[in-house]
Image (cartoon, rainbow, N blue to C red):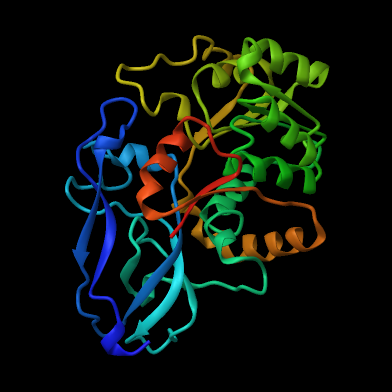
Length: 339
C-alpha cells in the first residue's frame, strides 16, 4: 500500500455517556476520527479482530480503579490484532500481524514497542486475543499461581463456558485434576462443557447454585474455586470447599451492572474454620509467565488437550451490541468483533 493510499482517518466507537446499570446503545457512538501522522517507532495497523471483555464495564464508570476509566467522547480501547500497513519502526515490517491494545477502531497508530508479533503457524490470529492471549494467561496464572492448583485437586469453575472459564477447566484436566465442575447459563453451554472434558456441569438457572454444586461435587468436595461470577456462586463455593481450599477471584460478572452495593457472601465466616484462601488477582501481575504459558498452550493445542470456542460478531458498528451481549452471557468462549 503506497503512502498516497494510506488511510488518514478511522471509524471508531466512542463512549457517548457513562452507563447506569446495564449499558444501552445510547452509551456508545460510531464516529470518524483523524489519524495522527506516523512518528518514528510507530506503526499503522489495520485491525482485523477486536476483543470485548467484561472488565471493560468497570472502565465505563468514573471511579478510581486498577485501570484508568474510559473518557467520555473519546474512543474506547482494548485488545486487537491486525496487519501492519505502514511502519516507521525498525523491528516491525509491513505485512506482519501484531497484537496491541487499540481496539474499538478500524485503524490504529500504535507505538511498536507496545505491540507483539503473533505467530500464525501456531493458531489463527484471533486466538491471540483469547486462548493464546490475555484470556489464556488469565486462566493459567489464576489456576496455577493464584489458586496454587496441584494434581489431584477437585476444581469448580463458574462462568465456565466463557473465554477464561473454559480454559481453566481444560488446563486443570490437562494437569491432573481429580474432578472439574463447571457452571453455565444454558443447556447448550452445559453440553459444551461436557464435550470439553469437564466431569460435571450444571445450568445455574435450573435451581439454587448450592444444591447443584453439592450434587456435582459429591463427597469429594472442592479444593479450588475459580470465580468469574461472584454473588451466589461464591457463597455456594464457600460451603463446598474443603479445608485448606483456595479461591482465585478473577471476576464478578453477576455484579458488574449493579446500581446498589451488593452484599458479601453470608457464610464468609466459613473461611476461618476451613482455613480458606481467597485471593483476587489481575493478569497484569503475571506477564512474567507469558513465555511459559505460550509454550505449554501451544503444546496443549497441538495434542488436543485444550480447544477453544469463539463467538464472532461482524462489523465495528456492532461492537457495542457484542459487548452488551457478552455481559448477558450470549457468548460461548471468547467474544470477538471481526472488522
